[in-house]
Length: 137
Image (cartoon, rainbow, N blue to C red):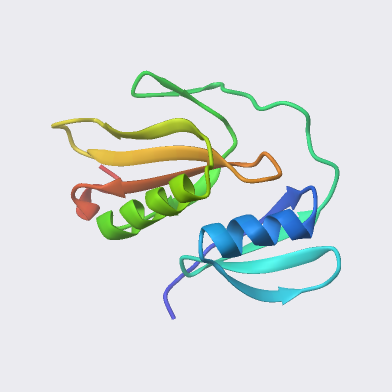
């Protein structure tokens, strides 16, 4: 088995969380209780725990001239996965907080990226590199 990451995060409720991660993104549900649920997030383990949510996002990150919320999490996808995810988000009328764009045009690390909020207000970034070998370039 390849190395995977585990990320535990807060959500306001499990019903809307399941709707976003399963119905919209297509994640598979893993183990759960009445206060948390695990998802297979492109081969990684997300654990969503019901808790009181913080009030405001902090757009303190600046990447290629764009303000981005910190913290955020997401997935590095291949181009087809990125396009499929973009379409799924659009079909579900999810508002992009950073619309799908290409950044670092003509440079190492050229990538498509987009940011959305899940139904609890957690910011997620999805990206796809033109050359996957430049993930850390």
